[in-house]
Figure 1 (tube, rainbow, N blue to C red):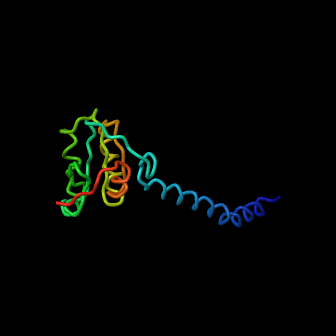
Figure 2: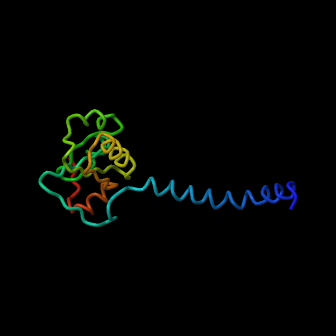
Figure 3: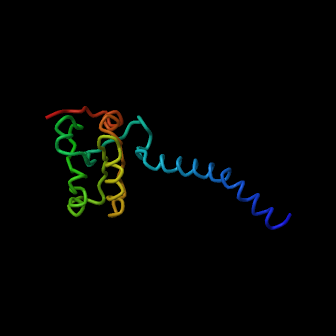
Length: 137
């Protein structure tokens, strides 16, 4: 096969190679955004030392949050500011409205050396996983 024929064949095959690669990248990208809850809908054990962190805004928190949760507004920069005052050896369960902010908060905590941090996803998923009720102020 001549060099020009080979190049022509490779150029013609490029879309066939690019499509599966793009599909794989999209799949990996979408799953990387999903909440990192251990088992969706599965129970999460709570101990007396477990810290529940709600990383939504104060307005969202007021409409309903897990009983006993501590509000640390991710969008307001409170998670980053609170890290020095949090116990890195404690267990943290983190949730928000959809799992996006809680995923980002978990990543911040893990980069800061926290080892027992779980993203519970949304407030509804967190309630189902922990068995705790959603209460409003």
